[in-house]
Length: 333
Ligand SMILES: [Fe+2]
Image 1 (cartoon, rainbow, N blue to C red):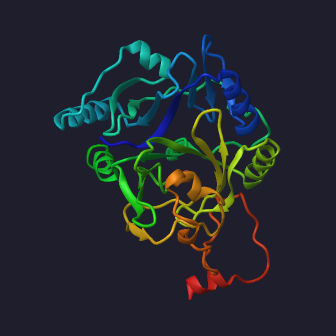
Image 2 (cartoon, protein in one colour):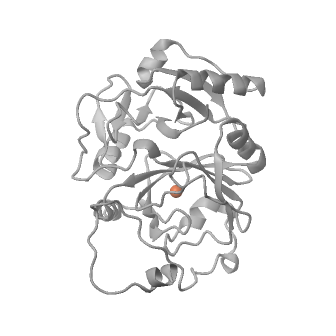
């Protein structure tokens, strides 16, 4: 009945050409021809993951959340309507346009347009990245995660948790208020940050299969003036090694590798005491807080020495080397 993964993202833009160049040259996505004033991009076996539309107002975005099947979609629609949320059921033409079996449309308390869908269509040709990368980590984890800024965290959080079935991964109350939420083993498919006067998407995270592809993406971003918004670093909650690039729109893309998976059956939400990364990510707090960034003296101190975590790798992607690891020895006693 509940949301299972982030499935697609739609973006209104005036900069169709810039978006194409960015998606192809920076992100490594595969552009698929949709004709007219829109462009669609693949990042895996799905027909499309990102849709950029010049006929859609710039401020308009839609977020596609996947459910298991048509019955789950009906159940979700009923639950939303029972709680007073207006749900529209677009015609089949819209589902065809999204390459899904069916969808509903509704808004969160901040006015963000959400879609829930089932039965995404697969492409009949393999994913072909536009530059030489080893692909994106998607599948049951979805296309990545998004971070939304809202003026009222409590109300928005209740909507996603109580009505859509998101579960809390961890949260922070100071110096910022934010909550990280999961719907599958990805540590968070959604994070919500409170901000007094900003709302909308802060960033979309896309996870690469290979660390070197992130590094080469970092090289490309650094070669373009003012493209890097947040330097390379490693997050302490999802363990992602990533950097953040500006896009032709007013949000960022986090381009990362090596995030952890969590098991909801055993996971206990914890309060974070800092959002400072293990290392790097210079510019992150400025980018999140904007004009409301704490004065320099109140910035979180650099990460304390000794904060670290094992690398998160998939079988076959690593080779062990000789020697001992104090971290592993400490964990295994
Ligand atoms: Fe992120």
